[in-house]
Structures are given as structure tokens and as C-alpha cells.
Length: 237
Image (tube, rainbow, N blue to C red; front, side, top):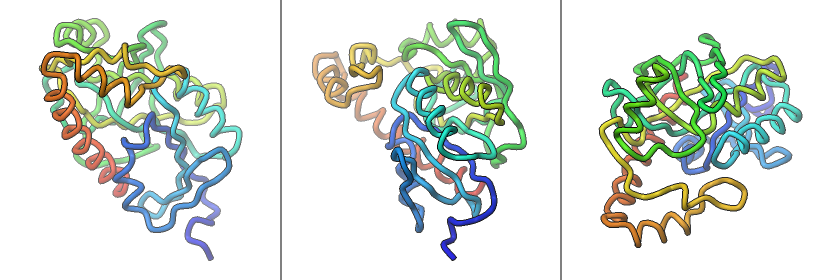
């Protein structure tokens, strides 16, 4: 029997970009592709189905709805990268969210604590913002205003779709930039037509931004570390 064919309902995973979960995929021996580009894999012996959504809550909402229409899941988890808002979180640290807050509306989504269990991660509130948070000052303000420890752009979209379908929701994020790091590159100028992030525009922006290439190199390193830690957590969850 194929090890991915099991009666256990799979977990749904939604990531913004493939590079966030590349180490996870490389560690798989039996990957299968389903309809709509969904990727079927195993997490510590448990089946899971992964969707790559693109950046932002709207893309995450659309991708999660498509996933839930096509696969009966035990729950859905927003996975990927986040920025730290509190000094307690360092680059590469893991956050298993207790609650997600949508910045634009103030809507709160409670995470299901038993949906995913990891070792060595932190717990706290995850803020879902509409744009990349670039400056240390902006991070400080958001952390204070919302009581959040980290910020991403997709978790509220995943949470909304999960609420519509009435399935459990969770969020597991790995930190790429901590609360003491500003981002010189203006990622708002790097948006693609579908609302995601364009790799070409990011490279172009790094060339015209003072110290942009140095920062892009630093972000590449911290992103690799964050992706590897995320993979380790999911493999052992």
C-alpha cells in the first residue's frame, strides 16, 4: 500500500512561497501531486496536503478555500515566515500562535492548541498585517498596540477560510527578521500583479537601495535558517 494512502484525515498546510517549505519537501521520500497543484506528503507519519498561495491574505484565503473544497482535512495550518515584534523572538525561532489578529479589521481567530504539537517553540499572538513591516519603530508600535509577538501577511486569510468551513485552524511561523532589524528594501514596491512578491522586482529594488544587496544576502541567510527550522519542527510534530 502507498504510505500516503491512509484513512487518517490529512492536515492542510498553506504557505506563501515554495522556498519557505523547500527543506520540508526535500526531506520527503513519497511526495505526490494532487489536483490544483496541491502537494501530498507525510509529517511524522501523518498525511498532509500543502498549498502554495502567494503573498498576502487574499491569496491565502483563495488558496485555502481551494484546498478545503478539494480535500477533507482534519485542520488547516498557516506555515511559513514571520517578522519578530518582541525581543524574546530571535531570527530562526519558531512561533506556534495562540491567536491570530487581522490588523485591518481587528478580527481575532483562536488557534486550536491540539492541532499541531512542536518542541522548542514559543507561543503568543500573531498579527496578520496588510504589508511588510519594514522599520524597528513600526514593529515596536504594532507589538505594543496588539500585544503580538510576531507579524506575517497570510495567517488571517487562512484563518478566515478555516472559519468558513468550520475546521480547526493553527499557525506555525519561523522568524526571518527580529524586532531589532529594519528592512531597507521597500517590499511594497516589489509586489506582482497578483498581489504576491516578484523575485525580479526584489532584486531590482536591492540594486537601487543603499546597502540593498547586503541586506538581500542577509535575508537569504536568515530565510534559509528559518525554513530549515520550520522543516525540522514539522517533521517531528
